[in-house]
Image (cartoon, rainbow, N blue to C red; front, side):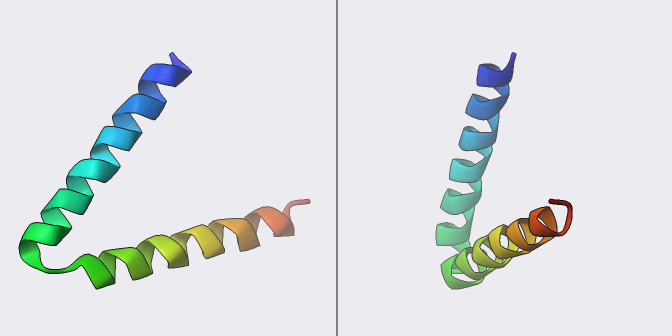
Length: 48
């Protein structure tokens, strides 16, 4: 079940990347992904 979910999330990310390229918003998308990862790491450190 987990491998199917991982595959679906990967496909969704790829489709989002394609859509961002088409609309010319790649920089905004990359920035949001980096911000999200940093926020997730910061929050996970709070609960350790």
